[in-house]
Image (cartoon, rainbow, N blue to C red; front, side):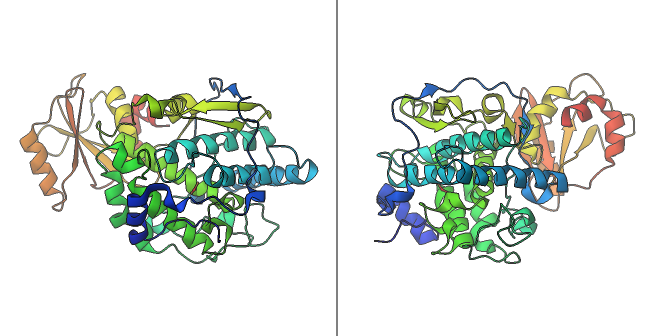
Length: 413
Ligand code: C2O
């Protein structure tokens, strides 16, 4: 029997949808799948009071940040050699994934545990990496493969492309210059993901998976690992450091989906909220964490995904903005604000008067603005009595923005 593979095509995804956990046959290679600790003996996870820091796109890390990432993984790999029993070593870290997918009586793929469990796994992994380089501000990077220019593996993971690089893995099917096929990660794949109407569609339920688990998630696994490489099968995927950057992006997609609409809520069913898993923490303490303790990654787990998407900064803008532009505005009484953004030029057009509060943008005007944007309809979002129309328009001078809206630019730092 061969180890379980990641589902990776649409037909496979449909298959997974209809049969739930059927792919998750227990592995024969249980030697890889050590139980992650002593069941029943875990202490409860304690509230994390570290500073909130951003996980960032792996392809945009500065040289010093790449070095830190490499140092952290090197230290984790070294630990596996210097103390093979240390649960924080890289091999043990990888084997956690193996156990939870192939041995655990309640596997974490193919059902609503998928997003929450992987969030918890990455969280403890990230804290251990930070501890090993003595940096509480260390956060994992993410591989944002849905962006068309980021479809090669991020350079840190492939340069150098040999075992002197602690982020390298010798079993990959992708070369450093290969790109993920668009059909696995492009807008056609992401659109149904972001627009999944409820958590069941997005994140699955008892016995079935949500839309993204098969594709893009599983597709990327198989694209990177092929069928023979570590990334391509459940049992070994955690052995490739790219796994954690891939899953940070999967986690970000959950975060983006939550923020995309007020109806995009996580389950409130106690059966979900009380799901609980245990991991060793950065001090080798065996700890249990519940799904309810990780649904807000920013306040609970102390990381966010920066400001790269409009839907992430909208609540911040609404909270901070006081529209008093010093320059004459182009048309009627519209105020146009450009939001500096890492990856996506996103702009908000707010309707209002130069008064402390922005007033409601009439639906009719919103529609008109929407259709004047090259035929593309803007995203309308109504929050606290405001309608904000987001359009991709020309980038304005952000320096001007900064002086016009000092509080806003502070908020966006
Ligand atoms: Cu636990 Cu990407 O799989």
